[in-house]
Amino acid sequence: MSKGKKAAQYIFLTIMSIISVFPLYWMACSATNKSVDVVRGKLVPGTYLIENFKNLIASQNLGAAMVNSFKYSVILTLISLVVCSLAGYGFEIYHDKGKDLVMSIILLAMMVPFAAILIPLFQMFSSAKLLNTTIGFMLPTISTPFLIMMFRQSARSFPHDIIEAARLDGLSEFQIFYRLFFPTMRSTYAAAMTITFMNAWNSYLWPKVIMTNGKSLTMPMLVANLVGGYVTDYGMLMLAVLFCSVPTIVVFFILQKSFAEGITGAVK
Amino acid sequence: MSQPRKKMSLSKKHSLSGWIFLAPATILIAAMSFLPMIRALILSFKTGVGVNMKWAGLYNYTRMFQDRIFKTALVNNFLYLIIQVPVMLVLALILASMLNNKDLRFKGLFRTAIFLPCATSLVSYAIIFRSLFAVDGFVNNALIHMGILKTAYNFLGHPTSARIIIIIALIWRWTGYNMVFYLAGLQNIDYSVYEAARIDGASPMQSFFRITIPLLKPTILLTTIMSTNGTLQLFDESVNLTSGGPANATITMSHYIYNMSFQNVPNFGYAAALSYVILILVAILAFFQMKVGDKRE
Image (cartoon, rainbow over the protein chains, first blue to last red):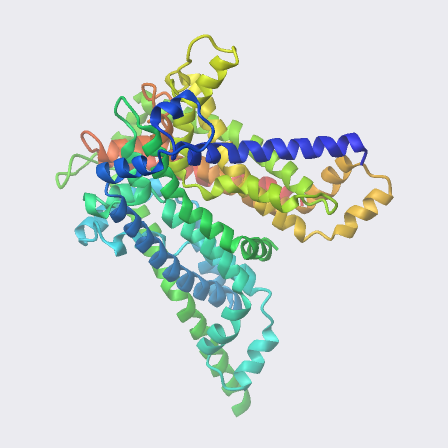
């Protein structure tokens, strides 16, 4: 490649990176500035962070929303990983005609738009008295075709010889799963964990429908509540957005490396 | 004689353990996706409020043809789909193939920066963009400062500019996500293939079109289906970036269904009928994409 082309490539990537990061930088900066300064276009961190924080906790139940979001997302992620990895493993390792058929029906569920099942789900959950509960939040998204497919795909690379050898050693089928499959599939689990946690933390439509009392609100709901009205306190708003974004960004950075590996295994 | 019989029972035992492994996930999907789908279908033939639902035949479906907001929502969804999905996927492909270059420096930095938007929640980024493009927002101030605009422009108050901003926001949020899938797909292509092509005198353009695209086809198909599905289900952006406005000009189907179900006078029957339209559209598009994806094999 010529030098000019190479330089063009670096410039392009740098511009794309700046565009990607700028809104987030602006958000973090604004969280430390007065609303008037944000409006004036101040682009350096300020000293108004504590004031913004005081205003935020005075107007919204930040503590409850953070606790709720963490509770719902962590529990959902753990259960979801167990249920979907068991299924993905089951579909691949013990595959036969019947199970393959069930798998293709499950993949159809991928096409079901959430809005299409929103009303019946709401009716089912409200008659089962599951509004404003953790179970209510989790139940519709514990088992997802995407995760099942991902684990099924990675189970494909799990050698059959190991399973046969383990059976001869007298390990039960479930022991093979959690003693042999689970430890070797770390990167798939990490990728699945990142995706599930982010989806759970960010989910908005379903909690908006099912969490009807103020006590059960989640972070995205809290952020959305702050908008509207004629005057927006940008400093406070961006601080709330910051609180809502930090957990997923941290999870992503911690699991970044294994995330990339896990996706690589899944798209093989 | 006893040997094969024992084997039979053993394989039966394994088959059974397989079913036990996949039962919880399968039952949950049946109960949380397929059962509600059937109930939505029944609901879509009924009309009324609360417990007083009456059979209405096809009334909900014929009613759509006179519904102007529904038509706007449908057009919006397709507009976002036709413009945003191709632009985003092409951009993601270009970025991924650039970052796959072994000699590139700061690779990790670029990749992390471009992926970072996907770590922000949908509500968060919608609100960041809403604030950036507000009348008193950063973009207006910057444009006035640079002398491009004389007075602030209400980007979110005009249908066309509001739609463009939704599209820009979507591209910003999802390009890195798709890029990761392409990067992962590229990892599975042996790098020596590119080196051999270069020695044979292929330009980077040629190797992109002759090697990268054909070998990434399954991944491209996967991301196309995921993005189509996601765009047709757009909700958070419509609600939080533009509130569907001005005057429902940027509303999406999911947003309209939500409004129809949970705002003002709820109309579950009509909302269910609308949601079946999305379901059918998603299914048809996925079907065609798979057909096209298969053909080129």
